[in-house]
Structures are given as C-alpha cells and as structure tokens.
Image: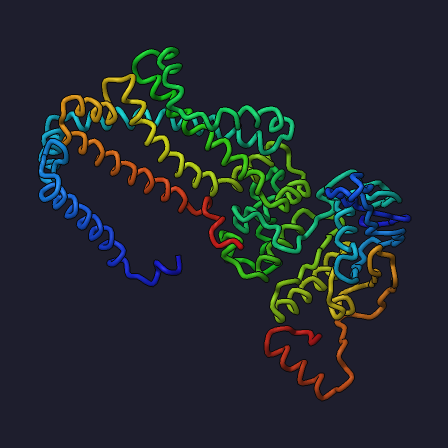
Length: 264
Length: 260
C-alpha cells in the first residue's frame, strides 16, 4: 500500500490585495499558480526525491498528499482513493522539528501507538523503534536536550512507529551538519530497503537525490511543472564521486574514519 | 541569564541585602534629620518595635491570613474560569467574535469602580473583596490565555491531525502543554495585581485584612502601624512572585526555555 497517482493536479493561491488603486477601485485578487498540471505516479514502496528551485511548490505538493492542503483542480489518488484529510497512513516529517517539545522522546514515539491495548506489547514496540534509530538511553530526554540529528531520528522513529503506508519528508536533512546529514541519509536508505515503504523526500541536494532515490522528479520554477521524471535503476550503495579514483579513495577513507560507512 | 551567571551566588544573595540596608538607612536619616516627627514619618526602629508588638498580640498574623484568604479565593476562581475561557476564545472564531467585544469593554473598568455594586450585591464581608480580586485577575488571565493559544506553532496542530488526535486530545496534549509557560508568566503578573487590589478592597467592606489594618491605623493616627501593614504587603508580594517563578521551573512546564 502506498501508490500515489496525480492527474492534472493544480494549486493556486489567492493573493489578497489590500491597497486601493488610485481611481479608488479595488484590483481583483491576484491568483498565483503554484502547481500546474502535475502528473506523476509513485509506485508502492518507491523512494521518490523531489528536486526544484526554492518556492516552486514541492512542499505544497507534499502538504496536499498529507491532507494538510487541498488542490484547486485535478485529482490525486492514494491507493485509488481521494484524500479526505490528514491520516496516520501518511506521516509527515517536518522540516523543522515536529516533535512535541513538552513530551519526552518516549512520549513522542508513543503518540502513534497510544491506542494499543496491551501495555507490555506497546512498551516493547516503542523500545524497538527507539532502538532502531539508536536513541536508546535517551528515552526520557526532552527534544531540546537532543542534538539536531537526534531530534530528526526521534521524529523518524515516531513516524515509523505508526507503520504508515507513506512517509513524507520535507527537507529532512536541512540544518544538520555535514556528517550528521550523511549518516541520516544512510539511515533513511537502509530503513527504506528494510521496510520498503513509499517515501517522498523534498530536497535541495542533488547528491541526496542521486544517492537515495528510486526515482527523481525535477520541478520547474513557479508555476511548477514536471521537468524531469526519471527512474534511477542503480544498486545501493551508490557512489557519485568516482572520477578520480585516488581522491575518491581518500574521501572514502575519511568518511570511514568519521563514521559514515558507505563513502558517498 | 548569561549575565547573572557570571556573578557568584554569594554576590547574588548579598546584593539585595545591601540595597535594602541602604533603603533603611535613607529612611532612618530622613525621619531623624528632615521630617523629625514620628507621627508623620516614623523611623525604622519605631516601626520595628510596633511590628513586634502587633506580632505578639497576633493581630498582624490575623490580618495577613485574612488578606491571603481573599486573594487565594479570588485568584483561584479567576484562574479556574479565565484559563478555560481563554482557551475557548483562542480556538473558536465564533466565540471570540461574540465575546471579545464584551471582554474588551469590561477590561478597562477598574475593579475599584465595581465597589458600589460589589457591596450592594454581596453585602459586607469576604465576598465583595473576593469578587473584586476575581475581577482584577480574570480579564488579564483570559486575554493572556487567548494570546498564548493563538501563538502556538501551527506545526503542532498538523502533527495532531496527522496522528488522528480527537478534539479532546488536541486540548489535552497540544494546547494545554503549549500554553503553560505563558500561563505561568501571566499568573505571576496577575497575582501581583490581585495583591494590590486586595488592600483597596479591604478598605471598604470588611473589618479585617492588611488593607483594613492600614485604614484603621490611619484613623487612629498610628503611622507606624500603617507602615507595618505596607511592609508585610511588600514582603508577601515578594514571596508570591517567588512561588510563581518556582512554578515556571518545573521540567515539563519549562519546555519553552531555550527554544528558538
């Protein structure tokens, strides 16, 4: 489960004008078209990276898929059904931390499992997801007590714990330092191979898209249209920098020394 | 925060002692050299002496308890009604469109302007005083709560929708914890207002409390008792503020600290 199909999807925003014109009449509201005729299909279990200039509407598309926003025209189907609103089948991972700051890591991960009846089963499941993102020992920490990378991992654990069909990530690596970014990227790839969920990732980083994606979709400037939609049929781990083998080797060595095992 | 941390705790505890000593010294010199009339401005020693006297007879304690009792009730009722109303106004557009004009109309009316009504409705005793304290705290609490609800980061509501929160869960798990830091600040400011109003309220309708002590002593030309009352009011004000600040340091309530 996790097939997405968009059909001539459009989204316009209305820019309300407050100022009167000189002749005293109001100008009609200005319409800004953000997404125009978007036709993409995401297969079940695919990891799709969305690239494009800032403000081109990639995030808007994600918000529509998550049910936080609605298209102006066209249709979007998830597993053949219209989106009626937010649902725990499609979990959104926010660009800036979406962890609830007044809850500990444990309580945050528990959000998706709060309806489980068997307390013991619930406890072990929460523990399992916390261990999956290597946050064991930090269960009782509040988000502000964690580093940026740990916060993202905690949010990832919270998202995975619900067992969603689709994981929607809006620039999940922004604001992380270089090495944390590499490690997180690696973890997301591993997790995707292991769990096989449909994942949509908005990114600015071409490397991210090339290394992670099963498919890359490139958007144009506003009003956005799909400029490129290409399947990446390369096995993981992928190596992008291999023009100069000597340098590439040294790079590998440095990465390994600093804790990123697949030199990327 | 950064600046105070550079000073040692010793300096921190000595500084207020030093400034209070200077204050008492200035007071003593003014009383002794400039005013020179204990009936107009009694010196610190006279005031201390009479404070001991009032403490021994137990009347100072009795008046303090009476005032604290009224403030506690008035403030408690204001918080119990004001916080929920503020949450409703913050969450419901209809409620805020209907009730905000009324609240903004009543808000600038000084609680003291209600004194005639309060006496007429509640008679003589604790009730009119409690009512006035309630009025003084209620509106600031409602307004602060509404503002706090409006300023909750919208991301948290998206998270709530994403995890299929019920309306009750949104209030319990998002709204209430999100506004706690601001509510504590609001309560801290409001309890001071309530404490200011209790003195005024006690000058009209009751036969006890620190406000009554001051008024009664003025009628008897005992300025030293008047000052005793003022000093106790100031000390309790300090203590109330201290309690409220302590509340803000509870871990799950202090999530706002250090957030960008």
